[in-house]
Image (cartoon, rainbow, N blue to C red; front, side, top):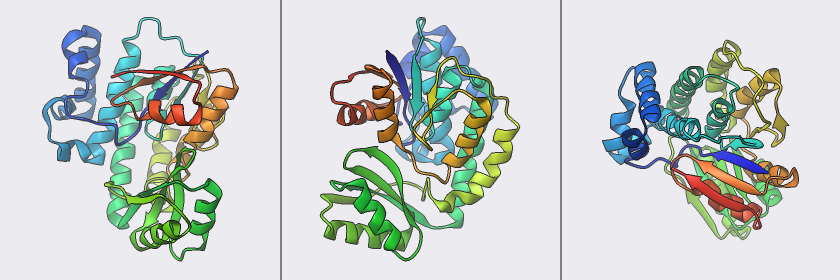
Length: 291
């Protein structure tokens, strides 16, 4: 069985999607549609923009989403048995399997990015990658720290990203290193994604998601919030809303997909981060990607 997986924020690179735009008329049409919906030429930033421009959340998220979805739409034999996306990638996955239209998905992603950016500006916050500790140890230490700091991304065994208030994240990093973490590395992100500090963004996005038509996808979507397969549109909506303040259970999602029969994982989107994570979670899996 074949699973398609879609990357999240951080996978972007200068020149992403340009080859596709230049060589495939269908891709070019979709990229131009994205420019029209967003009201600015995101393709100019994707193809020729600086790293700083690409790093802005309001640019990064729609850029990665558009690139990933265009790749899926340009595969003639796109027939997944299951899909999943990492954080933002969940929206790409849902559009790829027909649960929502490209136009609606892009509008939601753009609204999500702006709401997250706004929430970041309201609460100075950060994220840090923790390497070499068991999940339970990270969870227990975060729970005992004063202030807001939580596990945000369960990326692979021994790799968790924590998220929260600046001081709480700093203290947590020190405590986690004392507990034996190989590394506790602050990440160059705008704020505390997938933490309670994203509550203002969750509230803002909830209304937009509720007003978006979501239909039954052609195959199950393993969603971040519980790592389980979903096909019911009402469940998908609730899980998308909860995702903003909840943790990304990527490791658990891949484990469940593997247990449910996925032997090949194909990453659609910029970079190859997810292929590397899949190999750590399910070493026997076949991995490949298109970017």
